[in-house]
Image (cartoon, rainbow, N blue to C red; front, side, top):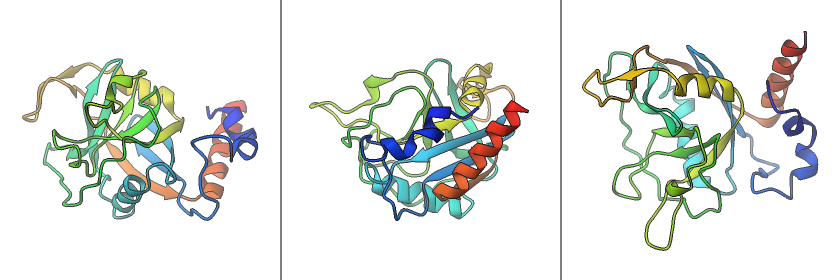
Length: 207
């Protein structure tokens, strides 16, 4: 169920929170429809403009459709954006300058850009934090992992995925769920579309 305070107090908190979104930003949310349930992600283009633009572009192009959550570590993260259900790699040529110093922390329920050892190698893969993972934030000595969104509906789905048994398969390490968690579609939404969808979910829970 979506957080009632999120729906009821967004206008009040609009200018008081690091999650405030520019009024003219047409894409404010991503709806991720998976084989295990829906996940609604609120984006933060003010704090992570390059990352949000990159992720939204991939979503609009259908890049994520048919991919799986290929890395699931209980009490840590669930990650997607790299492999389909047949473990065929899906890569993107675009990379994003690291925006981890944007003031957003890798707290439970936040969404961040995955990357390799190169701090600016983040592209299409992203993860959802299952716990408060401040060790993924930047420090004076190193770059961190850029948070660009947060889950506002479907955290129970995220937790269900995060608790799935895993194994080594498809040429990947032991963090792959034994049962594929497939992303059926990722839809970019503006604020009004997202709120309408959230309201429908809340009404459905109350009936």
